[in-house]
Image (cartoon, rainbow over all chains, first blue to last red; front, side, top):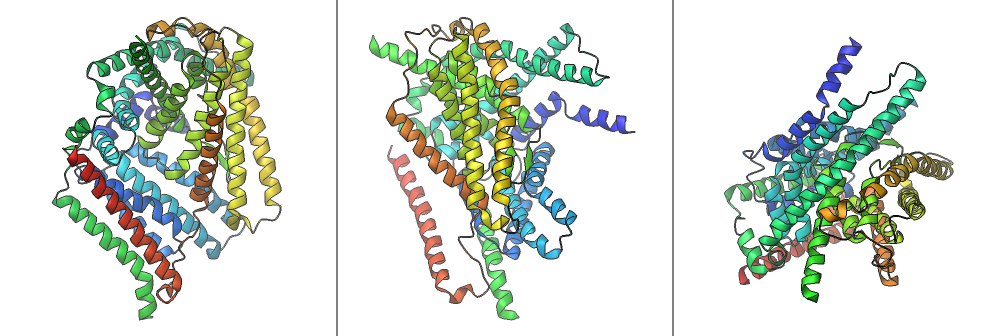
Length: 279
Length: 278
């Protein structure tokens, strides 16, 4: 039973699976309501939802903001792997505190500050997942470019998504060929397990040697192709920037999204006050 | 002639940037999926793949490699996976950049294995020391969470020191020193022609960082530490209380919110104007 389970888990965490998830995350959800929004609106939206929760300490307000971010993440249809990594991150930041607190006989009172901290972390992370995973990489980098981010950064984002599947495949091929050529040490005894670990680490380090050489060739080709198109002149030329960014337009959906966000946030902030007035 | 040479150098810098970004980005993306071990606020920060930018920095232009590696980590493992932590990421970006840049400039001749070894382990130690310092400062600034625990500062210093030594001796040697020593001599003279460059020799080695650059790096680092503290502690700058409306703090909060909105709006308008004028 346990063996089957671990086999199942290992099956899921293969390099192929990672590649598919990342690609799906990048290009698989172009038709979501979030992906259709204007990147500039989303970046400003992120500036609010990614920063403001850090400075709040009221559970009701945080809970409201968290619910909203959860809804937007749902709308962005983020890949499961990203959500898993996110959950792991939240747990490693605050979840273990919960267990420790319970272990030392914590009561409901000790849980409230923990809940506040967890809500803060979760809300900010969900906001960043919505914006950075929900958007098409090209649209995201165009949005960043509009706000005057360095051209290198927006180039890196667009390039990273294109090169990643190729590199994943190549790394996998190299690792497989190493595995074919060598025999992994038996790992039944403790000494054997140690040797097996050393062997694995050595394989990974060694497989970066051909990967580096291949990647060097590829990056030369990339840069030369870019230079042919006048990339470095274009990146500092305002005319080119204008043409590049002319696809950005704020439409009706953006206004609706912004309005809903503002109304919801205002409601969240007003809720404690309203409760105070009513009670 | 000089302009062609400098143009070529610029293109080479871009190639090195792309190379370092994609390799280190891929490596961090893989290691990001292995959960990091965190005990309290102390993080056992094992940079398993630091050997990649270290090797590249010793063979190519160190600044491009350092910036490329830090950008790659940011783009691949933070933005692509949606783990972007906002201003807190600045700390990691700068510690990695500074450590790799210094390691790259220290090695004047990559064939000298002693220099390579010293630079590799020194850069790892520097990077670990900087992040340990940031972690300790975080605890000092973010005391409110830890008031309940007596003797906490001592325990934090102990765990930080232990983590530093453990990281340096275990992963520093295993994942930074040995792979760098393995890769640098093998790649030297092989990888440079692929980018259309000459291998680095003692004569055309990169310049030792100037005082101005060092001071700039220190200033950036202080900012990064402050950013990390702010992001970790999440200071309650705005105390949101039910009776806030009567307090003077509310007015200031309102003014602050209005100012932020005004700045964002003004920036958007300004940007729009410059773009439409071009």
